[in-house]
Image 1 (spheres, rainbow, N blue to C red):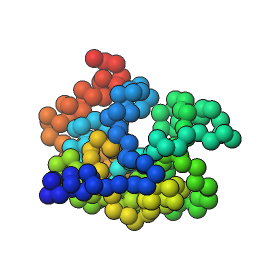
Image 2 (image 1 turned 90 degrees about the vertical axis):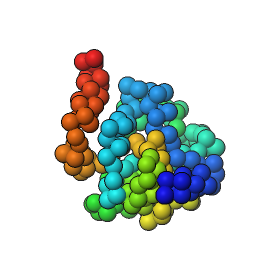
Image 3 (image 1 turned 45 degrees about the vertical axis):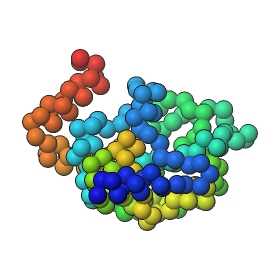
Length: 184
């Protein structure tokens, strides 16, 4: 099944040069402000859980009427291209209707994991997306992604993930937390 999901990911395309953002790369570019879950958390993600992904396109840049920079709600740093963000999956809480024009911005969104095979996942988009007209993704669409694309695990799953860990995983998680605090 891994090769099947990998093949699906390799052939998955979005219009207008949109691509899923690689969280590992974004974290490497800005490690202090762009946090992603550690591998020990990602290894425990399973069907039924919600993960956050981002879709973006290098084709679009800041529009003339937009500010040159704006604060990023995810990393609290400045960014030159806004990213739309959805705080929660739509199936967990009612979300207000969002009426905004498509601007070519990137978009963070929640996906409910349906299948996992190794580091490959199949999920269902769980937000109404503002930029659907440009990237083609809509609430309820299937999407294939890699563990490297995961930007966050929804808060409701954190305790369940930690409770399911063995001693080696807990030690790895403690080392990761310690490195965030600068204890190492």
